[in-house]
Image 1: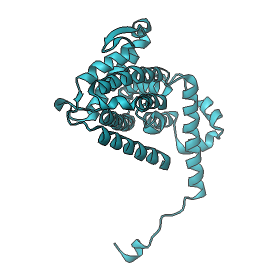
Image 2: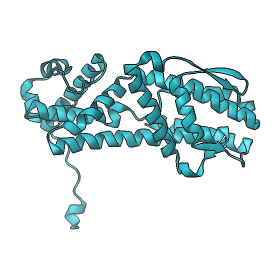
Image 3: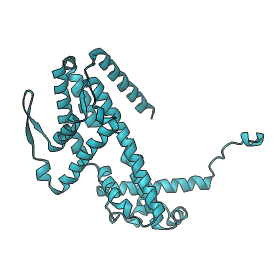
Image 4: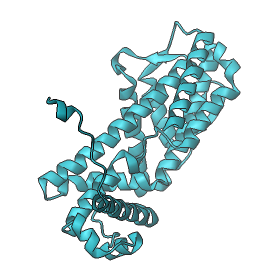
Length: 286
């Protein structure tokens, strides 16, 4: 590299570039708001009107034309935006699900000292938190949009557009699975469970669990009376009422994890609390 090259600094964004960037973001944000109000994206984009997006964004059609030559170009960028982590979110679960799981552990921390107590805690965390997660999923505009995008992407006629949207969906999926796996690892540590040999990683548990719960969500769209019918399950201390989605997830989980014979209560609790503090700190930074 020449000496003069090393001294070059990035150019400041020109006013015209800055304006174009603002137009772009305002249009995409406006379309996202309309998707939210509509309750999600339809498979054929029929609930998105281009004139309505222009009106919502409050930008001139000529400015938009400089960014996107056709409506189709805009819609492809919008699909990428809706498919990516910025719209789909990066959290493993909704905040209420995570709070429920952590609160159950915090309120009954003394039970961690006995194997039977840890097993019952795990059952209760799954029974209560998994149902909350399912309920949140069913009310999620982002999830309904994700389902529509998954159905739409392979039918996009342009190969480059198809690959861009698919890549955005894959990135969102990787982010979701990674964060879910971290949450599972935290819970397994404090509750005294480890992966069975065939499970390999908590990514596998996360993928299997998400497939069951999301598949149940799709089934509920067609047969809510079946999916929402409570199950009376005999537990260690008597009958327990389970939601079908939570119980289905529980049966998957049992095949993936087992009690950790080397569990140390004090060490596990300290590790768990340290991880929580680190995650809270990281969340605060971002």
